[in-house]
Length: 379
Ligand code: FE2
Image (tube, rainbow, N blue to C red; front, side, top):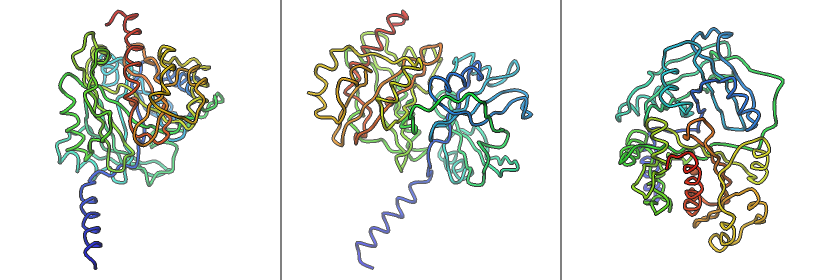
């Protein structure tokens, strides 16, 4: 064996040894909401999610109801309480509607639990196997920032629609999809001076590395007041940027989030599309509201990002933003908060080579967000 081969093999062994938490992707995102039935209708009608599965009284569950919806690889679970008291009610009272679970798809839920708790993760749920006539699913869970949870889902021995306890949900009403493909990234807002702590958590407990991108800097300016770092797992399928507030002239959107959510939580979910113009057109038609940058943004944007494949006019009409890094460019757009409290929102993103997160748009965006904050009287 030549020396080159040996060192290659060694590197591979080191890599294998380091990736103690191989993640196959995001399995599902579960929101605790006040009225899952109506929220499910919203995600069907406005966002084109397809009905998949249901659990509740009809499936023998007495204390909560859940609807599962899917669009390509994106799976949402919407859960509401059926009785007073309990974990779901308490979560909703404190946070309003919001993300409770970011579930990660793994080959081995027990191993994932052991490896992460061994490194300091706080246990949420010990590994358990649930079964029905379609097979079995193994679940385990750990706490992350705020009251947010990661559930590890092992489903290689399951053939059913979602997991045991759920039945297929197949209503007649099925609005078409809008071209959303997968979750590109999910951003967490954490409290003052907590970004380092939670980036450290993802590094130490989950084996993530800080993604080197030009977003990974202090991005506070007169307008913005936040700091952000992006953590990514080994294969890059899971990307979690973490924001913390920073001192600015005015109250930042991160502070506003923390106040209304009563702590750390998921700020936005970025959904990828292959055709952002068509996707955003469809979403707007169905009533989804987006943030608007001033038209003047488009006067100079091409000087900043250079040549792009798309015509500028439709992008301008829809308010789609453009940014570039060393590897390519990206198109993105952010919704207004989709809940009653000014907390969670969505991003629609189309990547054309770029691996970053749109730092070049932050100033224009923050001005747009501040106009909204002004209207809410929370600046
Ligand atoms: Fe984002």
